[in-house]
Length: 569
Image (cartoon, rainbow, N blue to C red; front, side, top):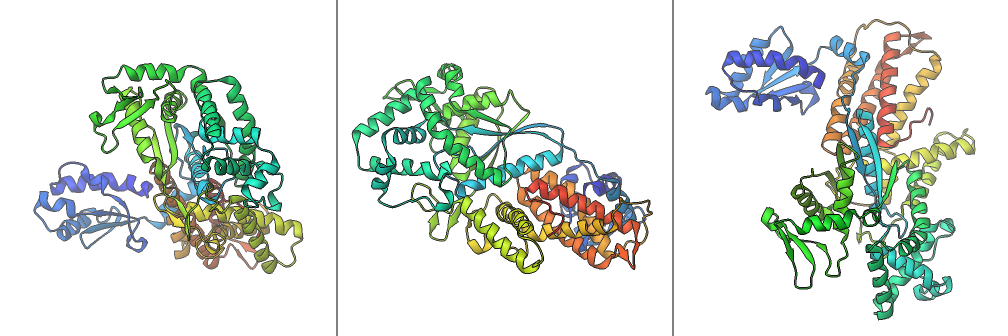
């Protein structure tokens, strides 16, 4: 609770100085209490023991005595536990605690190869990335959401070759009935065109040299900026990308800008970069004529040779990625990339090369993979759960629940609520897990509306909306009166909202703010139960003001997670 910390710090500084503590290292240890019943903030006194030659319990007791009467503090087990005064806390929360962000941020996320529909594993990048965009905006930062389009290289070359050389009949014959498009997705290009890509991959496995030579020629031409080939590639991948973006739009995910990988080949950035890299003292040349940087000389362990140019003079993906990052640093103050954990080595190599060139290293939020019970998801192997199918299942499941709970709702309202609940549930199921942790996808968990779920948070918001609808007017004048325990607990959670938001933003941990919304919803439900805004037709203006403040905070927080705030469910 940072607003409490601003009061505690100067009081503690004086008391610690009087006790003989030197330095301000203790400020890093002062933080939120692990258990809410212990207090709002805590300071462990163990770090002072050696310097003062005292027992931590005695240090805590002496400090508590020195602070007595100035702030609510208790000494317990070598800790100082601080608790905010209820009326002071209410004043702060009801006045509004401002956000602190004011930076320019560019977040690159998703950037999936446009060769087929999103499966749940690939969509984790998009959902986490979009959530970080939303959280930064709520924090007060100016954010640009960027999609880096892979419009060159082998995968798009395979797709382009297939679309130019294979008929629908050819594809059906090669796949022999496998990978048929579900009737639901007929006409959606990402689902349909992926079959051409799969058919070409099947042919390549048979070892047809002519196909490999043609694909290789296309790749080489694209990597050398051949405009006609790049146009052919765009004609192949654009319908697929449009279909993918349609899926993301249903999830509430949009982008501000799209930047093509080929841009940096065509405008000469990559060529100029390779000349610069060749002049570096850590540059080397392999026997086949390929060029590399020996990053082992800069401390990289393991695979130390970072190849950036092939023997034929063409660039590699990582080379173009470096040119892209140099360009991105001209666009924004802070760069954040959302990458799967399998990109850690390349991200390290790119970062070290940027440092060698005198540029800053971007922040990277790595995430672990989602698996199926039988193994890793893979479009290439057909071992997938498509996001489109999951959204349809979520919507259908939500519709069943809504019909059971609200049999008087007409079909249009049921469908509208079910879509919002389904999309929100899918997003929250992914967001609430620490990005560092992988998890196994299970239908029953993804579609769960019980416990720690989006519908639980959404329903708390609709309760607050229901109160506002019944009263039908803005909050009137009020005085802060008695504060029952349920209201006090709600105030404590609300006071930490910006703290948790800042932590989620700065540590790239959106699940921390998801947990905050769960805590806020739980606290509001207790307030709703124990503090009646309407009592025998009379409005308690203070309670109403608290309910409206919580509603606003829930609405903003849900939107920052991509959950859809409804006024009724």
